[in-house]
Figure 1 (cartoon, one colour):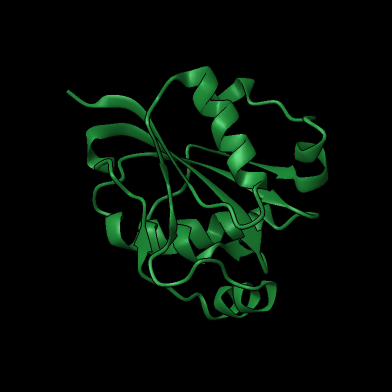
Figure 2: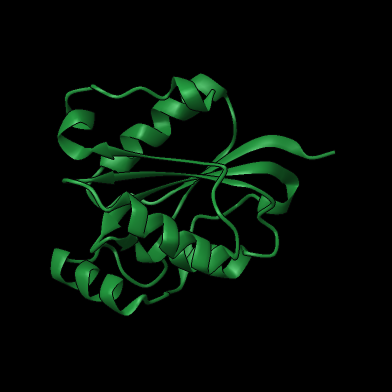
Length: 149
């Protein structure tokens, strides 16, 4: 029998991690923190270049099998109106195992519609729900995750 939810996130600046930890605290579900396997951290310029190219890279930190869960909640920063490279890489590697997913994105302004299209193109299916959170609001603790509980 599948478990209910798994959170998979990447956070370059800590904003997406704040959301991931808050949601995990409310749901009590497992969580995987993705990181680049070969880089400690990418620069902002490198992140933008990877986003424009729709790059993938080796990632580490995935310890749970997404196929064991009904829903995967992806939490990603938006880079150039696209998924962050570690999230795109994970999705590409596990697209057959992901049954259903929710996409939560952090950003300076917007870009969610394009990021949803990006995720759907990688996974071959639309998210069951999606939302974006402005980085400035997350930093102040002004965000609502109730709809995902």
